[in-house]
Image 1 (tube, rainbow, N blue to C red):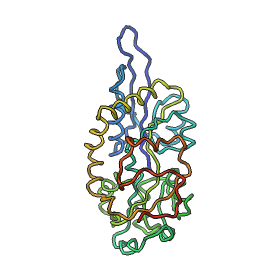
Image 2: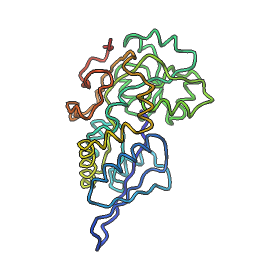
Image 3: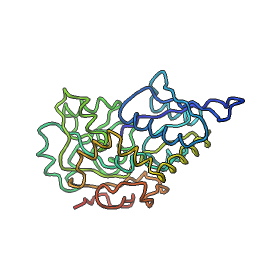
Image 4: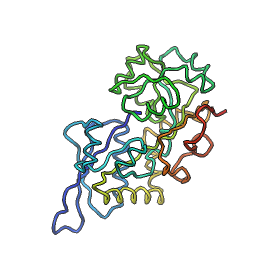
Length: 296
């Protein structure tokens, strides 16, 4: 899966001021997910008694650079899909920013290939499809772990062109990502597959530097508070990308195929129903679910 990253750098407390001040610096790269996560971070920190000031970096940081910076404490927070490794190296805020929406993957396919995907009914059918993924994405490991064929690229934009050129057959993206991304490549002969949804649990969390546990507490407190008073729901449902996804994806009428995520941490709060949307008319599933079963 592809992940934009939020960067936060703390400044020292200014003497003689009632509220502590920290500067929140975000990656200059702007896309729909960046805007959403920036807004959610600001919502969470609005519940703090500290004064947070927001700025952007002067350059785009690569994922490896961000991760190393967060580990060292020079950058305080980022976001992305969770894993045992991520939760070991950083402080996870175990509240899925998208309430499980991104667990539902729709496929970019080539125009004219819909008939081929109409014949996909089972997990074994899915194994005949070649999927495109980012080289460092957790999604690639999940698909490969399920026994699916994966073709990788280092840069996300390359994947759209590789699909258009026939290097693989489908490019799974979150239900909230496909429509905006499709419009970004009008010259490619791509479309969104109409009938399938691939589901696996991969929550999107904020991850905070182990050097800044106070910031982690502020983010967690703010998100929990926003859930309790309804601000999280209002923010989520008023997001343009969420509105578009819920309006166009028609998830309940798609044929669902589930695969397990063997990298999903045991601490994932699947039992907290208030954190997850019931998009398919059923409860969230755990990692122990058989990978070859399709929803009927």
